[in-house]
Length: 229
Image (tube, rainbow, N blue to C red; front, side):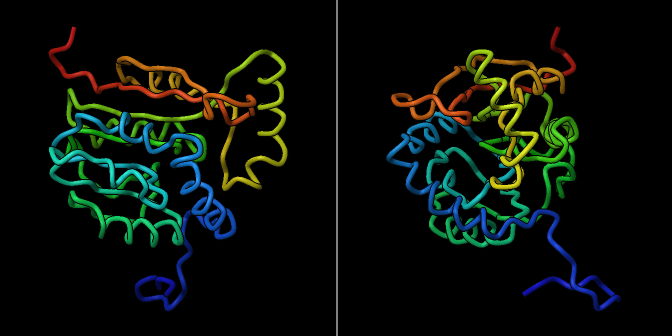
């Protein structure tokens, strides 16, 4: 049921509310696990993680099944109510402890330097303020901690990039839950002060037509520790 603001009796609204897109995303993301190879991408994204992990924008929780047993806890932030409910169901089936929490990427409801790793997976395309969201990711990550990212964004030749920008200015965010096609996740991580580790640009699907959302990047970054350099 809707939450009520303390002392006011008024119903509070979720900061992100895309019920129609959430229904579509739930179906499409499950299909993509096998048809687009997303299950393999998730395994590569999360392999080798350990300790406490915060996943920002957990969606319906499809990453949860792929966390290795070396992870002691996952705090999964998801602002959209329907997707958060699905994530709770996924958490109950997970082999590692997962706590699904409401919140936004721009104001994470957790303590500073509390996590060994941050996971962002197909989320930077849709946050309202990318620099602020990454500043929050840096805040909650311990010095030397790891960022694992899988994002789509700007790619292709001049014609494709023009198409991505045109769609971002018109119908795409309205139809896709606030998603944008022409953002640069690698550049945004670098500008936020993270050190970039290995990353790989890839197409999704790897074989097939190149569509505006096809241009993806999978990789690792970290928060520099005071002793670096």
